[in-house]
Image 1 (cartoon, rainbow, N blue to C red):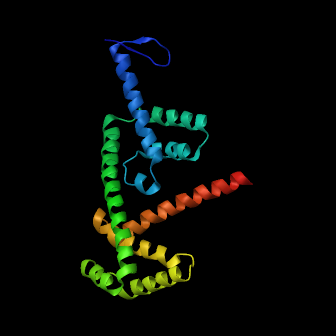
Image 2 (tube, rainbow, N blue to C red):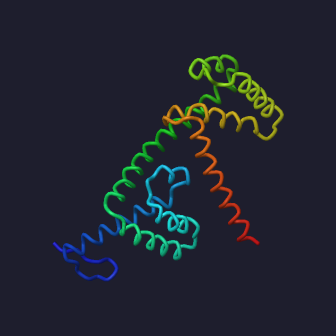
Length: 205
């Protein structure tokens, strides 16, 4: 049974229908790449010649122009061989699993932070049993500072620092990374956030 092109209303033969489905699949793949953070994109084997087109699609926010750039990216992606596109799909699947583990770990980080604030040294001892390389004195100081902040209704600076410290402690083990890799990934995300902020500031000028 022949399909119908949604845009033109024309009937498509089997080969044209398949080609259109393939093109839409590549377009969807391109959209996934554009949605990745720099740290996530670094884990995907994207051919070097595609990276500028991905960066340009991330930069453009106007709806029509963004859609046009996505189509341009997909056009270039279709020129890559099937093995390259399959490698991208495999890496995105792995990223999805990594994201699930990241979310689960973030929940553990939040739980540990609340335990530390509630139970103090008792919770700290339990944390050190599980992560003996953690800095006892730094954590104890941050916990006390966070408790003081809450009591005096001050900005939760130490509260946020506890989260970052626990994240650096728990996440590498969950993802099979070392702390240096995690820090490098965070730096990439921070640079991207700063780039976005600079772009917003320029638009306001």
